[in-house]
Image 1 (cartoon, rainbow, N blue to C red):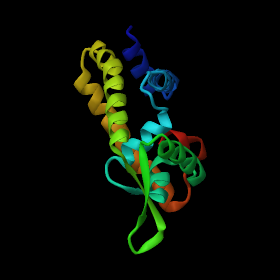
Image 2 (cartoon, helix red, strand yellow; image 1 turned 60 degrees about the vertical axis):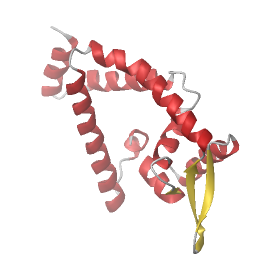
Image 3 (tube, rainbow, N blue to C red; image 1 turned 135 degrees about the vertical axis):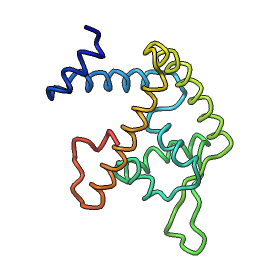
Length: 162
């Protein structure tokens, strides 16, 4: 029996531990991919790169405490990858935006991740299905985070996964 079939059979019986282990292995492998950025730096640059984001909003989207975000953002600013900009009309609001160097660092990291992950996806025999499943999982994680944030009942053990 293949690992995929074994995992599917075990998932049907409620034992998700093989899936958890596979996701943990994937996460660890991505963390060890040489990108020039740490995983937290990458996540913040990716979100800030979509358009200047308020620090509070970034912290919520990343499911991290604001001091954690501030610490990582300080490093990105010091490295010249991001700048902080005051909100016009409300100087209390600070947005984090990418610099040209930050966009270049993000492009290098994206290329490094793709170079590692692409061949792994190909080995599945059906990369399109795997990517669709990951998109579904990502959407579910977003809904879970939003529901926890709205109700104030976020699951502490899941905070780092979102």
